[in-house]
Amino acid sequence: MRQRVRVAVEAADHLSMAGLTSYLDGREEVALVAGERRAEADVVVVAAGRLTREGIAGLRAAAADAPVPVVLVLDEIGDVDVLTIVECRVVAVLPRTAATGDRVLRGVLAAANGGGVLPPNLVAELMEHLRRLRRELVSPTTDGRLNARELDVLRLMADGMDTAEIAVRLSYSERTVKNVFYGLTNRLHLRNRPHAVAYALRKGMI
Image (cartoon, rainbow, N blue to C red; front, side):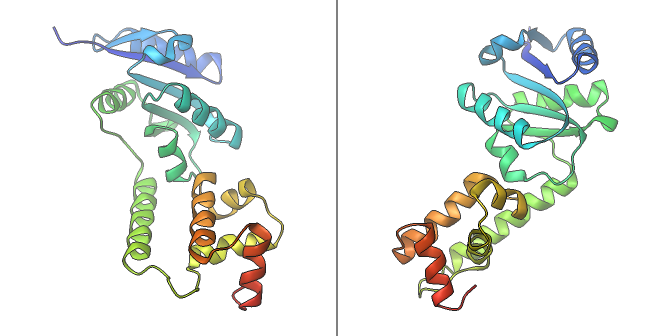
């Protein structure tokens, strides 16, 4: 007999929790585990209204404690940074309006088998991130210039924004912003944020 996929369910409201657990508990492919035993699960299904900064922080902390693939069911997908959710181990995103029991189950089984299910807009965003990364790797700036992403980050730093605010404005994850800043300071031998902003101002880049 094929081993059942162990699934933990987390939801922001009792109705979503009841609906998801009721459906999944009736499927022979799935064995439910309690939310507090998340680390024992093969897949975690998380239902929420929309992905807020607090929600992302919770997903990131949970992923650090127990790196289990996540199927995310959202009322409103909105402007989600695909790299952020990937960092949080989210491998499938389903809008609640389309999240029938069968679709949730397909997402769970895909996640358990190392796959994923993303809406077309998030797939397009992921492909754009990959294209941008490839362009930067093929033609890195080595002569003291800054690429477009570095300039965007430094402009917002010059405006007094912190890392979290910059991430929201540019639809990046905080880790992406930190990596961009680390890359430019390391390449140009800049000591800190004020030094980097001053360098860009002095060169007339921002």
